Image (cartoon, rainbow, N blue to C red; front, side, top):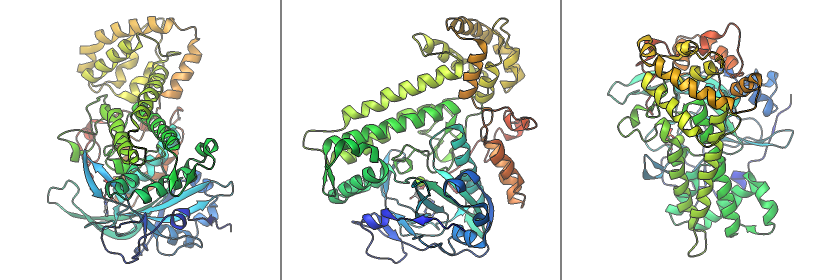
Length: 529
Ligand code: AMP
Ligand code: MG
C-alpha cells in the first residue's frame, strides 16, 4: 500500500514555540506550536471525498483501513506526519482581536503527492491547542457535515476553496449552546480532515506586524512567496532571502492576493454563497474559501441577507456587502505588509487591482448568468432592475436563472419563472413588471449575434442547478444525528455535477420548502459549532 510522503516545511523552515506544553497562551516569536491531537474513544469514518483522496494518492484500500481512520481521528499518526497548530491574529467584526490561532485545527503536516503537489492536511475538531483560549478544540457533527459537504460542493461549482478529505464521528459528545441563549446541549462530536495547498490566512501576517515582530514577518513573507507563489519568483531571482524581501516583490505578491480574492468573491456572488464570518483570520492568502461556519446560500434573492445570527444586528457580512468587506480585509493585510516597505511607500496603488479585477470578474459572471455574450454599457440597468424585482417579489436566485435559460425569446411569458417565486400572490402581483423586464431583456439578447443554443449552453455554465441549500444540509444533519448518513452520500453525489440536470434528483434543485423558512439551521446559524 502506498503511504504518501510528507515534507513539513512550515515546521522545518519557520521558527516554532519554545514550549511544547498544551495550555492556552500567547505564543511570541513563533509561527507554530507542536501539539498532539487529543485521542477520541470511538472514531468512525462517515464519509470521504474520493476526489480528494485521489489528489493525495490515498487508495480506496488505504481509506478503508483502520490505520487511516485512526490517523484522521488524530489517534495514531501515519509515518511522516507531525502535528502542530499555527499562530495568527485577526480583525473580527471590524475590530482587532489580537492572537487567535488554530484553536481547534491541528495540522498533520504537508503531503507531497506523486505529481509533486504539496497539500497541508488539517484536522478540525481534534482537541485543544495553545490557541484554544477557553474553548474545547472540538467540533460538532452538524457543523462538520456542513463544512465537509460545502467544501466539496464549492469545488465542483468551480469556486476556489479548501477541500475536505473526510468526515469522521468521534464517538464522544461535545457541549454547545447553539444560539448562545443559555441552552447548552450535548451534541455528537466530529472531525473533518481539511486539505489545501496552504491554510495561511491574512491574520498570520497581521499578528506579527501588530506585535512589531518585523523580522519574523519578513521570514514568513519570504517563506510564503517561495512555497505558495513560486511563479512570482521567476522575475525576482536572488531578491529574496530571510531578512531581505524586495519591495517590488511584495507589491507583486500583494497584487496577486488582491486578484485571487477578487476572483473568489465574484464566484461567491455568482452562485449565491454567503460566508457569514469574513473576519481577516478567515481570509486565505491563496484566495480560497476557508472556514465554513455559519455560511449560507441565498434562497430568495436578497443582498441584505446573512445566515449568521451572531451578525444579525449590523449584518456586516451580508450577501451584498461581501466585495466591500473583502477589500476592507485586504486593506488590513496591506497595513501589515506596509511595515516592510521603504519609508513613504505603501500598497494603496496595488489595492486598486482588487477593484478592477472584481469588476471584470463579476461583470463577466453576470453576463454569463444573463446570457449576454459580453458585458456592455447599459447592462447594469437591465441587471439591477431584475435584481430589484427579484428582491421585492421574493424570487429564488438559483431557480430564477436556471429557468431564465429556458425562456422562449420569441414568445416572452413569465410563466416559466413562476416556480421561482416563493408565493403565488407575489407572482400575481409582480408578473406584469417581470413581463416588462423580459421585453427589455430580450431586446438586449437580440443585440448579440449568437444562436439560442450557444447562449443557453453558456448560461448553464454560469448558473448552477444544485447548490447546498441551507435546508438540504439541515435535512442531512437531522438524519445523521439519528444515525442515518445516507443523505450525506447522496448530496455529495448530487453536488458533484451542479450544472447538469440529473434525472431522479429533481428534489434537490427545488426551492426552500415553507417549513424551512425560519427554522434553525435552515435560515439561521450562529458561530457556535
Ligand atoms: P472561527 O469563528 O471559527 O473562525 O474561529 C475564530 C477563532 O476561535 C479561531 O482562532 C478558532 O480557532 C477559535 N475557535 C473556534 N471554535 C473553537 C473551539 N471549539 N475550540 C477552540 N478554539 C475555537
Ligand atoms: Mg476561523
